[in-house]
Image (cartoon, one colour):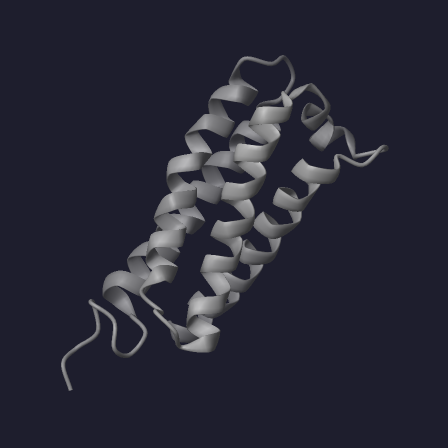
Length: 132
């Protein structure tokens, strides 16, 4: 389970960091699945981008550095809280069913990480880890 969670954390972390950075640069020629970024307000780009970058870093760095590894669970939960907003954004737009499904899949994967690092296979020394 430990390796599976690590793979999931790294995958999700890189994904959210990448999407978060795109909120700040909004490059020309994004794939059609990401064209919704052109319609977000500047304020929403800043809020969403910051949350996604910090959440992505929070999925990876605490476990790697062994500094406050319990923050991995909080990062996953924080991103779970952000994702319904993304779902609602796509819900109000035509033809973005695939993006809504992606949001739901991301919520499910983040829930696996949150539960896994909280109860199933917590990092040593965190609140869910067995006492030594």
